[in-house]
Length: 349
Image 1 (spheres, rainbow, N blue to C red):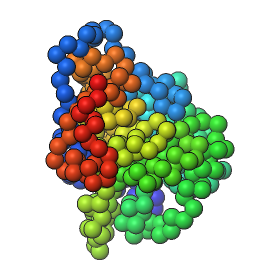
Image 2: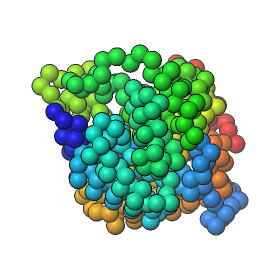
Image 3: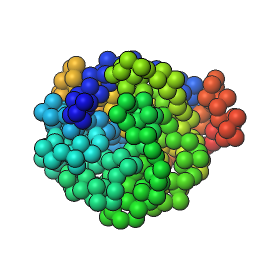
Image 4: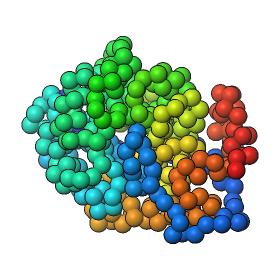
């Protein structure tokens, strides 16, 4: 099967695959503040990631490209929505365009539609420095995501079977590129152990990419007869992964994986993220309701965040990192046995 056909399959399965929703966000209760001492017009949504200033603490995360005209149309619409709302945008893995130059336009369209916007490139951890440079230059990227997708590759019949040297390649790319490098998981979560290794490199941010959203193991299993179902329930819930990552790294933390609501973004920021990436739910709105409705939804997210931050007395994203929350259920158990002291989160101020 060609890469282009596989890209189109991924879109179709991502839209039809039922997400587990087991992000852990439902087990996080925000402590209400009756005296917030702030006003709506005092709240700023600006956030900084890897030295880049974001106008909103959420962005359109990596989805597609490399699948011919269909993926070009999706990326063009996403780029226009990002431009209209002022948020950042990441393209999907650019390896397709590196291996087949005819697919380059499916990625370059985002810069054509959004010439002044913040755009993140995307490449796999198997990439060389030269390929990373090519990916960044292809779309004049402001930052480059390097995605970790071990489970997807193992679940994919034609996927990689060796992951040796990934950390060393990431470190070399981060050292060589003149733009910030972001390492992201693709739906199975960054652990504390992985974050500690990444923290020793010169990357600028880590996207926790937790379990609970688009499940690439399930997607790959839908494409084959001999299914590796043991990977479908594999992963670290998004909320736990954010906290695991934030507990050990000095890098900026990003959140993704099953973030569907403005309250999910808020909880991600409270747990320590500087911004949250949204992919599957935005793709579904775009394909089912159209570009105009996607723009409206993004604007609703921005308005909602301002309202919730006002209620909590938070004038900035940094203020949210001190909001007290009570953790319950499986998330409490996970954090406790991993030594992350969930009780401390309830006593912040």
